[in-house]
Length: 274
Image 1: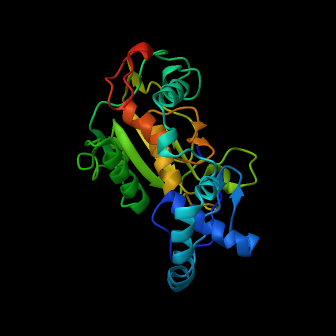
Image 2: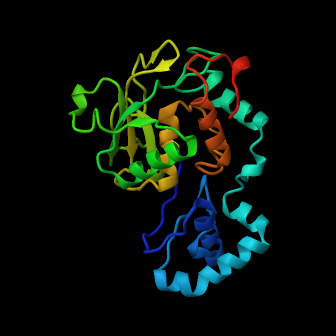
């Protein structure tokens, strides 16, 4: 689950996480209502295309060439790709998957890599964010990760293995007064917070999992959607660059790439970082 603060839907967005966040940074210099860092994520606010292209595009070009520090702040303190060392990938993979001490592993298959056998059947249900996420995951990993056909037309109750995107059914923790504390989550059913049991066959993830996006009070961003796919693909606990700070980051991609470049059940000592 990722804690998100959404904002008013305007017309334009920048072309990447950092560029979009930096645009918010420009606006913050003029009026605090436009953005900044709030909780776990940057407030995502967009501006009309004409205003963005005429006023803020030249500023963005200048700041990207002259102010790397501002870029890091605008991205929620996340690391650049040059900061993604093999040691950082190995440490984060251990926290989120190999150690098995956190949710959802509950101590199962400790010390070995837990992931899906490829390709993973996925039912996107026409959600544009989910489609963009699976496209980007396959681009980043350089291989086919998902089977988008086999279960696409099946009723949910006929699906035994795969990922189902469900919109409007994200789980909000009991007692929470902020619906954005549940912008997205992965679970065994809509509107719930728990995984099915069992969901592992040895170290292979094999179950019907729901990627729940949005609830009546909050809409998941593109970054949060990709974050939830990360959980569904085998990331458990958050780490720096994955929920601790930004929803996703270069380190997130390094960890995910390494997970799917090593065989299921690979021991911690034998993991090859990609």
